[in-house]
Image (cartoon, rainbow, N blue to C red; front, side):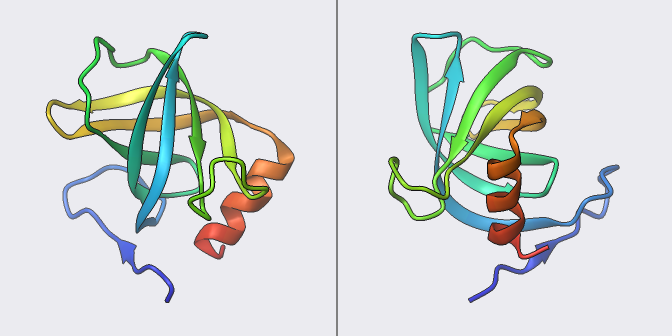
Length: 114
């Protein structure tokens, strides 16, 4: 089953976003990691639902990992660095990717079938 694209009527972004439910992790600094779930994903950004609230601000840099197979040690993990673009209290954060290595970029393309 291929996830359907999501088009926001009032949003400024140009990328097609795909509604997905995938395990994810957001790392703040080197010692703090939050488990979450990807809500939607594009080639440049993602919205990650987070259960825990944490002090974070727009433009903060975070590390991220998305686990397509649900296996945190899986070979198809999409990982890199991102900046926080939006905070939704009680729901999660929107991030835009700033650094993804070639392998993760390839996994991301497969994941959203670009």
